[in-house]
Length: 83
Image 1 (cartoon, one colour):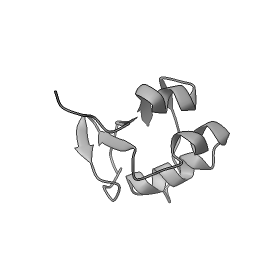
Image 2: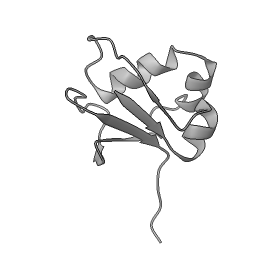
Image 3: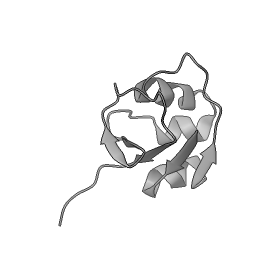
């Protein structure tokens, strides 16, 4: 699965994107975030406040409880403002 990081999430993780093999036990975006936080200090820092970081599965904005089954790409980004 491809993970893509934007804005300060990218800066904190230290990479733009990566391919990961997600364990079968990871079923939702929230599960994925918790798993990522355990992968290293940089992920812990990027996702320290899980309620702030937003996600999109295959270019569609989703909530933390969204299933990741069949996802090709999951993007993480900070809240956006209109203008």
